[in-house]
Amino acid sequence: MDKVKEDKLVIILGCLVLFCIQILGNMVTLAIPSISQDFHMNVDLTNAVSLIYLVLVISLVLPLAKIISKYGVGKFLKIGISLGIISLIVCAISPNSTIFLIGRAFQGISSALICCSINLILYLQLSGEDFGKSIGIVLSAGYVGLALSYLFAGIITYYLSWRILFLSLMLLYIVAFFILMKLDKEWFLKKDISIDYRDSIIYSILMILFVGFMSNLDFGGIYILPVCLVLLIIFIWLEKNIEYPLYNIKLLKNPDYMVGNFSSFVVFFTTFIVMYVLNFYLQYALDYNSYMTGLFLLPAAIVMIIFAYIAGKLTVKYDLRLLSVVGCIILIIAGYIIFKMDFIPIYQIFIGCIVLGIGEGFFLASNNKQVGQTIDSENFIDSASFLFTNRELGKTISLSIYFVVAGLMLGSDSSFDDAVLKLIMTGETMMEISIVLLITAIILLFVMWLRKKYIKA
Image (cartoon, rainbow, N blue to C red):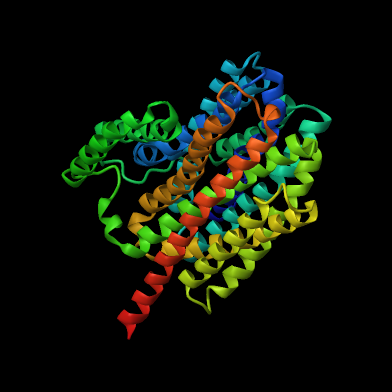
């Protein structure tokens, strides 16, 4: 197969798997009320449906990137897709919540494998200007997946069932697998590097324990914190004294890079929990079915794609940090509107969703470019893995804190059906936390802009 045809197939493969991952990551949120009702889940188990997936993604992406790059990217992508298919079947046929959560755990591992692998394949297969264009195309496919995920999940859950929802994704995974087989090629980044398995294990345990600490502050989770701090110190010390580290710690010395990653963490913290709580409010408080909820949330994702494109054009003329600041300010306005949900008409909540999409689109276009410009090409894999981890960590930490607040207000044995008012109060608490974080990100981004301007002067 000639190089041009290979490149096209790789781009199609990247679009397809990222489209699937985005749908998988968002569709479950919309289906949670139906899943929770079928399995008679309490608040803890309901939140665990998303949390178990996210914690495995963030604890595995960074370690897997180096392992995959040494032993064969295509091989691990096949494993990731195969595991994804198995996980979809497990969730679809699960007789109880325990089996369902096991399926969600498999999905977390699968998504980590797929995300690491496809980034590496794009990086190794394409080069120069083609790489930049291709990343833009693949990211756009991810945005389309995000936009369609709510409607896709809503229609199938309402007219068929949430079990069919999981099975319906299988076809896309199977097509991706056959494209990979057709390529019949293997990619390696550095076959001669030594894999730091010890630090990989330490990192994974650290992330799992940290999420456990954040999720159980109300039940003695604070005692996990000293263990997390000790593991973090050990991890950093070991990484600084090894030839082939799990992650290039030197990247963290770049303030622009760190602020870009922190801002990404904050934005995903905010947008995830806003949509998570709003979905519950629409279905539990307003008695919307999953189809109507999907239609209600769809315009926000479409607007995000449009404004990501507009902001992408603006990045040529305006400073990336200032555009990120604009995105964060818009998100504060959107969150404030939405979390007044019980006191304002439904059309104002809808407007708030549109504003949220505008803010997220502005931020994503500028932040992606900003973080990419702060590192050189040889650190692309470390940077891409770290940025993706930060985004998923933002979702995970927001859900963990929500887990604690909901447990305190509703009680762990309650369901969301039992206490809609307390659900709204929980959402308002999360918005207050989000606003503080967004203001912090705005200040840091503005300081970075002033720093750049001062240095140039």
